Image 1 (cartoon, rainbow, N blue to C red):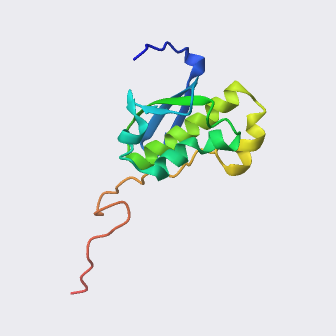
Image 2 (cartoon, rainbow, N blue to C red):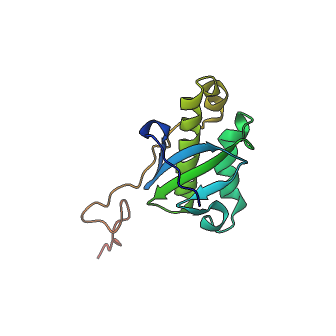
Length: 135
């Protein structure tokens, strides 16, 4: 495997729930590499996740011109896939500001701010209370 050297400005950062993804776009054929391995294998051969990740590239009609290299940690597969998608969209905007016009209406540049609510003391979970007994 060839060693690639990236600048800090080449990073598209995406977050979703607990997942954080650092995304690089390299000229290629549309391959997805996640954490130095095959994207298909990492995402457990789930095509839905792969289409989610490649959606911003398809929106700007560059899906077969760039390879996606992502380093992701935290969260589950859905959160990680959405974090990579946001990172790809942000990286496309860094490369060419004109892409923003076609990405914004699809919601690719919007960070999903929903995160896990914290557990409160006296409760079993964030909102679930212990069973109430009248007598």
